[in-house]
Length: 319
Ligand SMILES: NC(=O)c1ccc[n+]([C@@H]2O[C@H](COP(=O)([O-])OP(=O)(O)OC[C@H]3O[C@@H](n4cnc5c(N)ncnc54)[C@H](OP(=O)(O)O)[C@@H]3O)[C@@H](O)[C@H]2O)c1
Image 1 (cartoon, rainbow, N blue to C red):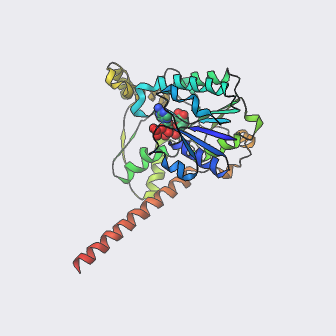
Image 2 (cartoon, protein in one colour):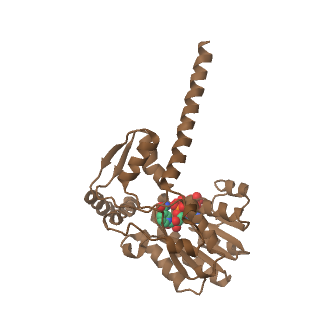
Image 3 (cartoon, protein in one colour):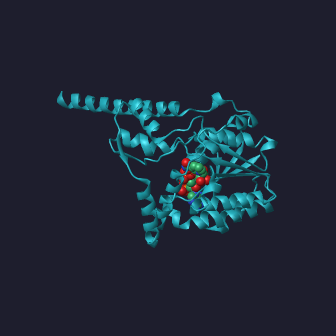
């Protein structure tokens, strides 16, 4: 099977490419910036030019591909173009996939997306899910919870940097998952007939609240956090306010995600059936404790090495 991967320079996409190459697949990456994607070529993937803002570039990239894995989504800087990137171009991609008789089409959506169609970006996801379900393609949709990797910028770095960690009082528990594990499920699905024309929720082993994550980061880093609490009504007010000004539409879009923070979701997702379908043992799934422990020990070792080097330079200078 020859794969075309979109979003291959992104957090999840790069893990999908890595796993696919490790498993011996031929991988072609749809990229808009060859320099930024050079590491994918070093890993053994082929690069092909495509830009979801320029739909004409899409069809030719499917040449020779038998499966498509779409891990792309508009960057924050392009939020004002989300309609084009996350809807119009994806419809063109789906039509091109039908014409090219693509044997498998994998798409990533957001957990419980159907409950949040009032949020513009999520609404686009739901429309693409419907487009795939109503197509004759062998699709597999993964509805994802948050990524471990996103927690570094949100919690770990501010704590290390003695900056404020922003939380809402109403914060609810989320079953974060490692993108390396999502990549395992993705690549495994290609060889499992049962996963065709199906949607699966992918979630981590445990649902974490903001306060639990902060406590874990404090324990692993040995540093105390500075917590700043923002009331949810304030975020909602700002979301409405920023909608009034065209220049701040992308801020408004991001803030509209606050609706997801207030509504309660099932926190303890039963993943056992999903693991069984994919023949993945729960012990193969990374835990947040383990992920953050590795992260902090790597960072703290680097900091220690740097300060050792600095001390050595000072001693040489004083010699
Ligand atoms: N992050 C989460 O917590 C989360 C949660 C649930 C679901 N998801 C879904 O999981 C998927 C992967 O998310 P992610 O966080 O890994 O995404 P990401 O890191 O933001 O990466 C986005 C990818 O899309 C590419 N892209 C953006 N605009 C493009 C364009 N005009 N043409 C071609 N490529 C373009 C980017 O390429 P460049 O490098 O060139 O910008 C990048 O490779 C997405 O579908 C997302 O909605 C994410």
